[in-house]
Image: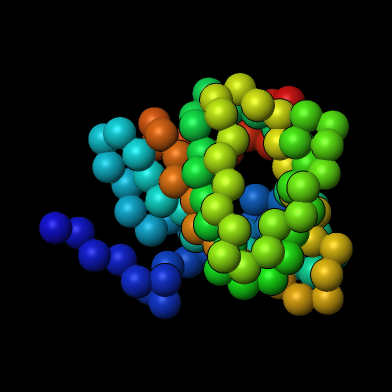
Length: 113
């Protein structure tokens, strides 16, 4: 068994004010811990991975195929493989959550749209 605590992770800034940290990575899926600062934008992108996540704290506006969906603490979400998506933190507080990607994804390339 592998055990990783959120307190033991190191965030990488993948876009201005957008941070990702690895929690656990297996052969078929990985878990990411994310934080999006107030006013920051996760650029709209797409990837082959299916992505399922959960908002722990804060509020985000998900940008999905040209529509906006508000995500709040306790909300779970899923982006199918290939769906264009991003997010904006329009609140005054950071948004924090976890995401599962299958298959695992290492370094996102935000230039791929």
